Structures are given as C-alpha cells and as structure tokens.
Image (cartoon, rainbow, N blue to C red; front, side):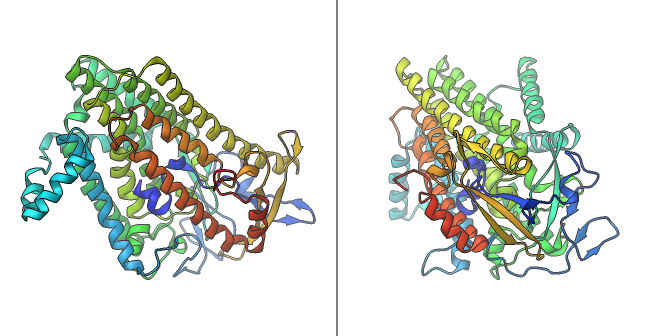
Length: 516
C-alpha cells in the first residue's frame, strides 16, 4: 500500500495489505503446552510503547534493547534481484523509473485524453528531433503557492488527527530484535472526520469540490518532492538518531539501503512513521480524490456517470474496510517485516494517491455509461473479490484464536491441517508459527491474493474498454503479487528451513490453484 512500495518491497494494499496470513507467531511450546509471555498477556492496552520479549540490558528511558546490531539481514530486507545486475544498479533504477512513470501517466491524462500511445508517439518524435528537453519543460506542471498551502494543510490535518483522536491500542508483531511496539489505531475516525470536514467546507463555499483535481499536476510535483525528502530524512535518522538501533538493517549498498530502508520502525515520540504514512495521508485521500474527480466530471459534462458512481462505491468499500480492520494491518509485511525507506516514504505519499486513482482520473475525462448488466457484473466481481479477501483473512484469525485458546481448530467441518514450525529470533529466542494448510489456505499459500486481483479487475472493468490506461492497475497488481509470493517463499524458507519445503508439498500452489 499498496505502489512502488509494494512492487519493490511488497507494500500497501492487501495487496495494500497482505503478507501470507498463515504466518502467526506464537510463544514456544513447552511439554506440549503453549506458554504465554508476560508481554502478551496484558490485554489490549499497554503502559509503554515498546515491550521486549528478551533483552540484555535496559536503558533509563524504559526502552529495552539487545546489544547486538545487525549489519546485514538476508531474511527481512534483501529480496532476490535480477541476474547480471548489481544491487547498486537495481537500487538506482528503482529510484528513477517510478517518478517517471507517475509523470508519464499524469501527462497522458492531462494533455492526451489518457492515451498512453498518443503521448508515447509524441515523446519518440521529440527524442528523434532532439527536442525532448524543451518538450519536458513545456509540459512541466505549474506549482503555485495555493497548491503548496493545500498540501501543507492536508499533511498538518492528518498529523493532528493521527495524534489527537482516540483509538484502540494494539500490539504489533515482534521485530527481528524482539521489540513489541504498541499502536493507536484511529484510522476510521480520521477518515470520517476528514470527509465530514471536506463536505462542510464545500457546502459552505470555502473550497470547491474540484480543488484536488484542479491542482492535480502541482500536487504531483509536491508529493514527489515530499516523498524524496521524507526518504532522505528517514535515511539520515536511521544512521544518527535510530529509534531502535538493534532493528536496523544494512545491505552494504547505499542505493539499496536508501530505497528499502534501514530502520524497521522509525518514530519521533508517539509519531510512528510506518503507521502514519502507510495508512494516512494516501489512503484517507484516496476516496477524496475520487470524489473530487467525480465533481470535475459533473462540472465538465453536466452529469456523473454510473461507472464513476460504481468506482467510488468499490474504492470506498476497500478504504473503509482497511480502516475498520486497521489493527489487522499491523501483521502485514509492510508493518511487520519491511524497513522504512524510499519504497514506503515516496510510494505511499506519491505512487499510491496518483496510480491507485487512475480510474477516477480517466473517467473524469472519458465518461463511460455502462449498461445495467455491465454495472451488475462489475459490482459482482468486486464484491466477490472483497468477500474472498475478507473470508480468507478471517479464517486465519479464527484459526489463530482457536489454536491459542483450545489447541485445536475445525475448518470447513474438518480438523485443521497445519505444521508447527519452530524458529529462532535474532536475539536467540525460540518461538514457533502455525503454518495453516486447510480451508482457503489449503487451496493456495496466498489465496487472499485472488480476492485482491478480483478487486483490482473490477476497478478496471468500471472504465470499459476504450483505453489501456485504466488497466495498468490490474497489470501492476498481478506483477506485485507474483513478486511478493516469490519473496515470501524465500523469506519463509530461510526462516523455517525444511519444514517450509514440507508445507509447500502440502500446499503446492502459490496463488491460483492448479495454475500458479
């Protein structure tokens, strides 16, 4: 979530959000029984922001830590590269192509009616004429003080809501060094307050409903600058002012470390970088962006198409569900395993709001009126994807609770099949995970991704078949999830060894049964 953040390092979105939900960390078994550490038996609230599973020393500020600092982490952070390319080359390329991609898609919609081919032909022509630099200068978005003020107030509002609104206190999973952080989950409140404020300001005439779409080009430039700046600040902070020194990861490549991140959970006081930037400002803005482009469609054409309404319903369902289940997000790969670098800092502030909303940007310029059966079929695909995604993850949660409380579980009327896989943390603590091989998780190791792909397909189908551009999202998600499945396989094989191979024999398919 989601983004180059997801493509490069498996970020936002269940697709924004998920890692194989069959990985559930439990305390080590003793004499056939599961013992629960004190840090996990304190209920939902916690007196401190950090607990430790095991520590060698305790600092005066109450944050416990191990003495060892990892210089390289082959499990958490280093995903397989491409043969023949160094990590430095790949890292530098991954810093360059995403901003260029966002800019290309923006210009295609801004000046070429969302035709990627027409813009491509023009670019090739300018390159052959030696006029590509002048072409870029002529089409560079104008950034004005109003757009800067708009984005600054937006970020300030989200920070205030993030810190001030009440929310449920939830624990995340243990970090590689054993830190267990607590989080205040108030995303749904922030989403509701933000949208109510937007409607009030529009109703009272203080802003136009098209304020976002009217400043879309300037906002693209501003979010790019902000994303790169945030990544740089995070990189410097990780080296000189780390929140949890023992959880840092260094690959040996400056480019790769800048891109993938060094710190696991950077914080400044109660402000958690990961939780805020992964879920706020981009995902809160997602539905506002759609509404603003729906208003633009009405302003330019005098009506809002049924496809635009359908898209807002589908996207809104996903976003609201994300925030209603925000505590579940704490167990995903973004929060539990990945470090905070460019792929999250820039990805969630620029890629997500600009590339995940391509369908609404497209429909604002190319209204599509679907027949009733087209609307019904598209809605059915979207709802099917949502139900599969939610059911698969609910089954994982149900299994975990049943195993923790009863030591056994029944799924689809049969005793659950699973592997008890022990492993050792970086601070030498022995724990184990349940690798579920029943129900949805017996069909494939990532069947939740099927729901993600159906959701993505429904968003694209709402735009009809007039242009290729709206279908970038389903192509991107397909690449993202395939990449993620391979990356998860590498990580789990390193973590569980031969037991992971045994699990793969029980559940041979990665995503789609009998296909892949």
